[in-house]
Structure formats: C-alpha cells, structure tokens
Image 1 (cartoon, rainbow, N blue to C red):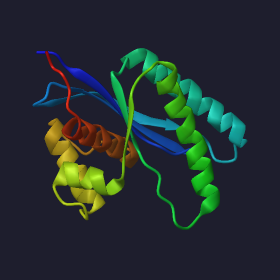
Image 2 (cartoon, rainbow, N blue to C red; image 1 turned 90 degrees about the horizontal axis):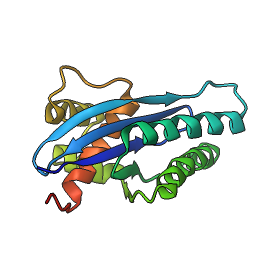
Image 3 (cartoon, rainbow, N blue to C red; image 1 turned 90 degrees about the vertical axis):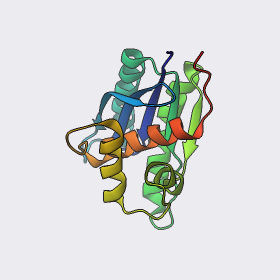
Image 4 (cartoon, rainbow, N blue to C red; image 1 turned 180 degrees about the vertical axis):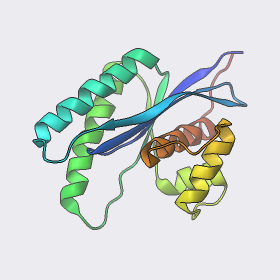
Length: 163
C-alpha cells in the first residue's frame, strides 16, 4: 500500500519543532522528529539563516510529499509574532520551492483531530500523539510533539489517493 510522507512543523525562531510521519490512510509511522534550535543573543538574521539551512536539510533528507504547519495566532506580543512569522515564512518558502503542498491548522483544529476535543489540554494532546504513534514516551522537546500532532491532524484532515 502506498504511503504519504507528511512533514509537520511547529513554527518558532528559538525552537522549530518538526515531525516526519508516513501515513497509509490507516496508520501513522514515525520516521523522525526533533527541533531546529537557535541561540538567544544570536543576531536575528543569523537565526533565520540557521533555520533555513536546517529546514533545507530536513526537506532534502526526508523528501516529504506534503507539509502541515501551525497557523499563527497571537494576541499579546506583536514583536514575537512578527519574528515567528518571519521564521515560519522561511519554512513555507522551502516547501514552495519544491512544489510541496502546504496546509495550515489552528491549535483548535489540531486538538480536535488528535484528541477529539478542541479545548484539550496540551498534556492530553501529547499523550494521544504518543499513543497514536506507538511511542514509548512523549516526544521531546514539546515542539517536536506539537509538530507530530500537526502532521497527524493533516493525515486525518486530508483525502489522499493511496493507489
């Protein structure tokens, strides 16, 4: 049976969570997950460059068929929102340059898809992600677990042709 490779991204500029899953329409199989990290105090353009280089490596190594990314929603800190949006743009551009379709999901959609309840606690989402993927423990850092949940949401939300 054909599998679709989904790259899930939890955007940020200090930590960008990523999760790569193979999905056959029934089961998810974790391929890899982790985080792209940039150091505080590093000039912002250098942080963006580091994110770009690591995201490019991830695309090259795992060759995803599609990418799912969290839709940004900020109400308080506008500077943080702008910085996260810039880092997120780099990731979206990397997908676009490879003609990889990108889908966006709100935290509410992710919670609904993974747990079945849109107001689920973060811990519930992480525990269900662990269960759905058959992992021995909750993925660390939290951003990687979030990225896997975003990828699961995409698998549940999209009609794929598995022929």
